[in-house]
Image (cartoon, rainbow, N blue to C red; front, side):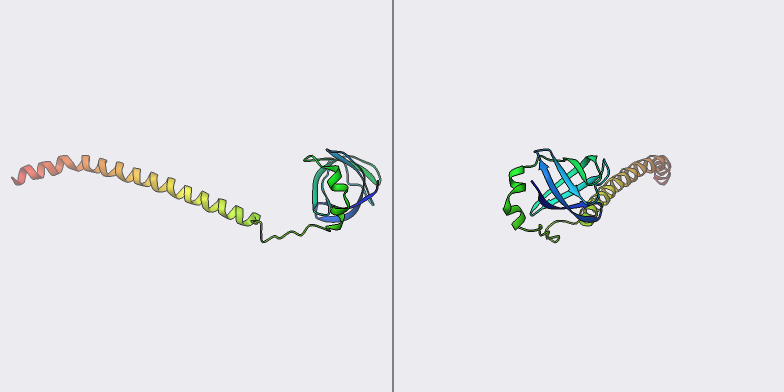
Length: 145
């Protein structure tokens, strides 16, 4: 079988052909096979497969997929007819937004811990100052009576 697909290695896209497929791997052909150990993404229509190259030849290479793949769905004509997936980036939270939310949560937690420690230190010092001044104030009170 010869099924066209798109392949992304790093930031670059290229064409690839799926020659054989199983539930956990594929045999692919492209103009230049990525080296062994490379992580890549294969796209066919709406289907996205993340995999690692387990062996590589000049123009053919084998990959092991991250998740199980349904060969029938990937090979169907409907997958090719759907075209490339449309990614609505506004629908998903951006990594910057998630990192910002995590940072704000961390800052709030840090504030609570520092404020609690400050309150505990203030109460402890208030008690200590009260004990230190209690004796001289008692002597002044006795002298005034």
